[in-house]
Length: 320
Image (cartoon, rainbow, N blue to C red; front, side, top):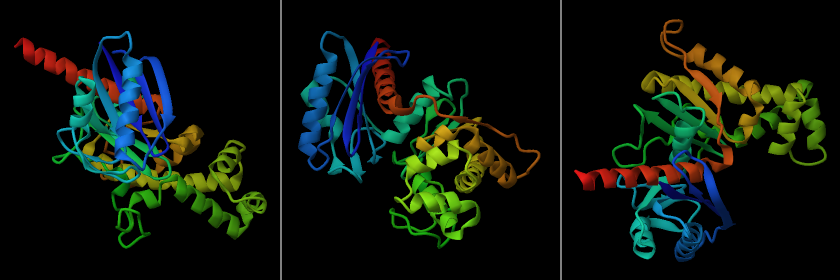
């Protein structure tokens, strides 16, 4: 059974024809007309129609950053797209003549990691995606957690510092302000200002502002300042993971995003901070920590798989 997955971002729309094993059979990318709901709809319809040519497609899954209702049909709010209470599922279904499922992009990517990536051997998993912000997904009892209104698992906005740094969500002290790519750059700049192990960071900053590419280069080169910034980031991720572990008790935490290419240089301080902050330290089981495996394809693969599963359930229901 084949399905199509679409991942809508602020700058691009990615689509793929995906089989039931999570393998991509065909794919396409186009720029995202983020300022117009109508143009986004048109672009998605055109992409699905092109990918579906010559194939029997069971359904379409669409992943987008934003709040999606529990029925997986309406986008309440998408911060980087012109959607406010957008009935996207109904519009696409009417134009495509195919069943459509709408899903939050982090949930879709997390589901792909659970089904086909680092979480494929467990039943309970938490994914933390470390990018400009902090995204996340939760799987518990082999099911994707969405919450009562469909907008659960906004892990990046779990508050860890009362009255802390202001966040784009309107609150203060969210983990996104301490465990994101932006936070890593802030730590690196603070170390550059302080001198000492930050001397190399300061020297590089003298020529151009520090960015993710420079930090990645210095981390891989084992620069002391860059590693210290990474350890600070990992400590915050580990502390947040300990709070999540106390509530969700996952078997594995999967870390994704660009900074995850650091591998154990990031995972080691995460594990250490987790053990230091978990309740009943020494007696509470410690989960595995792993790097995400699907990377850039996770969104389309997860969205397609969710659409395929939805189609299978409809078929089984029709047979009963």
